[in-house]
Image (cartoon, rainbow, N blue to C red):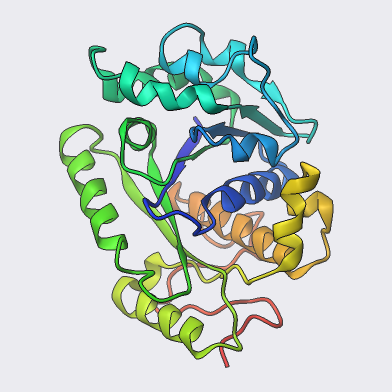
Length: 286
């Protein structure tokens, strides 16, 4: 059964879509079967993979409104092991159109249930808000991955999001867990980055991934070419960081299933340490 992970933060510009695209592609490159769901009306996860949904094509919008099953709307990305449920601007209307529907918070979960056996991981790229689209994703998810930017006020909105996660867990999805907190846009030349990273690890300990995503020009360029970073420039530090994150997630999934670090992915970092550090040259805190 697929491990379903929502990538969410109500703050914009923290690297949600970049993470959704690149961790999906990195896991596919490690032999996993991945479905990425674009649940953001901006459709950046779709365009970042070179997929532009035409006006007559099925998208997340039709799936949420019950006009299509997920299987009919899922498309191949051309990347082996990675499929996409695309989105476009029509999805913005779903925030209003879902309101009168019965069991409106569980629409996406019900649509995805038949797809669980086809994939190892299902990732959902959420919009920068806590509206019905994000609520549907969190209700459908087994866990939530929270990217936070290594800048001032980065932790300010995190408490609110975690409170929302707890409310959803209490009322709609008792299985929902915090998958992890991902530090993004890290620059080891800046004291602020190291301070934010240290504060996050102080408060959240082992729930913060060891892997941090650095500021990297190539990561910013890749979406304009419709490619994940592992295809655009697989040797850059951005690509190496997302591959490291994918291995960390894969290792966590095996450990939660009872497979210790002695499994076939024994080189994957463990998450037992309270203190974490970046494992890629050029990104270690000074």
